[in-house]
Length: 125
View 1 (cartoon, rainbow, N blue to C red):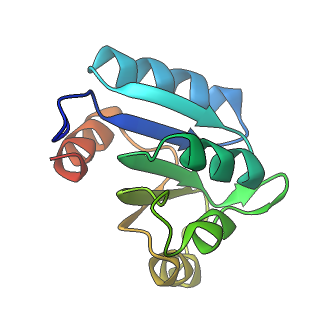
View 2: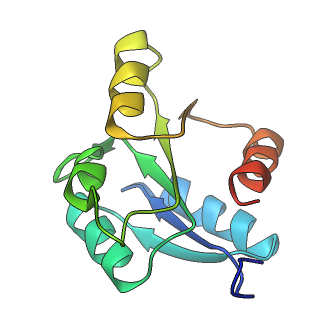
C-alpha cells in the first residue's frame, strides 16, 4: 500500500505485448495496479493522468528513445516515484545513459520473475 492507502501503481512502458501482457499479470497478481503505455507519448500522458509509483521503461520505443519520457517529465509532479529501465542492450554506455536520465536501476531483458518481484518490493517500499 502507498502512503494514502491505495495499491501501488506500476506503469509498464513497452511496445511488445509479449512483455506487457505477462508483466501486467505478474504485478496485478501481487496486488499492484497496472497501467500500460506503448510509446513515449502514451507514457507521458499516462503519467499526467496518474503519477506512477514505479515505471518500468523500455529504452527503445516506436516513437523515440524511451528515456525521452523522463526528459519530458523532468521537474513535474507527474514524474514517477521510481523509474527502472528495461533493455536488451547489455553495454556500459546504455547503463550510463539510463542512470544519467534518472533511472534508479537498469535491468537486462528478460528479467527473471523472482528478481523483478524482489526488486519491485524494494522500489515500492
